[in-house]
Image 1 (cartoon, rainbow, N blue to C red):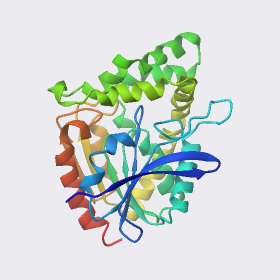
Image 2 (cartoon, one colour):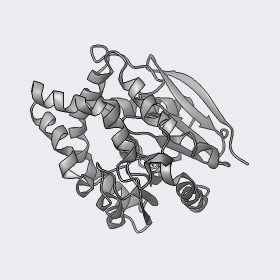
Image 3 (cartoon, helix red, strand yellow):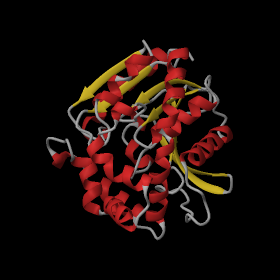
Length: 290
């Protein structure tokens, strides 16, 4: 039997946010936070497999079916996205929860944990980085150059990441048999990114990503002080975040469980059932008692 998934909207700080929800209030809660360039659509198959839990998976502002105001009207930053996520959880009455983070979802989740250290009781990281050694330097050079200097040339190089082919590469790089990944994924992401003004939204977040590594020491201190349970399920061949980023969690919490898979950045597309089984086992041991 699988959980029924509801598709809902809430208005937070004047912005309409879309979110997927399963389960009911009173159940142990997990909040799933997606990355670039996707949306909560990436969790479409995982959520029904988490029966017995309240699952909340929002689309960040500027992504998916949530509002996407232009950069002239909203100052996009990971602080701001974390504020909106906290506001949504407040509206939904969620005060203690596990987080499941991937890519951009990680720095949003880390902010939630650092701001309210007792609220987040467990972490599931699927290629959600929190360590300097997790960066695959060759792939990040273009973003780092843009962070140092916003020249037309550096901007043009990053705009190349918004093409259909570049988005497809995020899904199939490191995947032994790309035919098992549905093309709907990258076509949908490309459609959202192609909305007028959305490229500028994404460029703002590329620039603001520079604020994330300075938060890592606070993240590590939180993990150490609370000995937070962490489940890292990691695609080994992710071109952005390498497996050293998964292994590093064990340095800061004795409750780290590291699983490296043959796969890439969007591991749920190729190992969804295996990852879901690990998550169910992990939550049964660490979230029920919360």
